[in-house]
Image 1 (tube, helix red, strand yellow):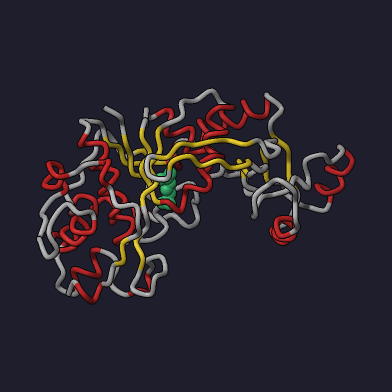
Image 2 (cartoon, protein in one colour):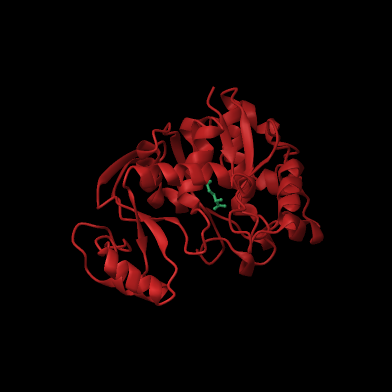
Length: 305
Ligand code: GLU
């Protein structure tokens, strides 16, 4: 009975793609009799808004998604992330990186051996104390990176199978002092007892980094299922510019949540097209995690109205 979760960032409203991921995460957990948690990923204090938190929870309820216990907020858990950072530091696994955004972009673009494209090549890894002091004296505030040095990590995803990535020296504390998402998610999933992570497959590539961190911190590694994203009619990842993509926008156009949930259910092969589905609970009897479509779903708001 694995515990699952949905962990939205309250930096904007949820759209149909985010909600379909939430529906799937809920179905995975509840179909096996597991607990289901909601966590607000409001690490970014500037971009996160309480109004989005309230709207996210209302949207989940409108689809019949329920959760166990209190909603946990990352903004209230900085002490846990600090403890994890202190442990990495004590193990000699962190170094300060003084690269500006532009310098990182240039370093990332240069060819760098076995690391994958987009990887940070370790420019600041071996700076001497004098070099560090000189950069700090220029007023640069460092971010903190891990010494992963290209170690290869394998993840087995339920839909994607084996995923192997060389781990670059990624950031675990941002230059503004905030812990990075990669760190927080690993600490939280462990402490909340999450055993199965179901989320969008845009995060698949970064998952080996999280597994690397979990192992370094001695934390449990959950099972992973990265589900296909929802696309707009133009084949691009669903976004605001595609029109009515949130429950509120769809409702304003006369499309009720049961129609939206029905369309999601049809896209998952759980209901015939055109069916209204009042609650995710109605989908439980037909849900089979092994029969999940592995291809993206194209959502056209105009065809629901
Ligand atoms: N907060 C992340 C997002 O909204 C999801 C992180 C996760 O599910 O691990 O994209």
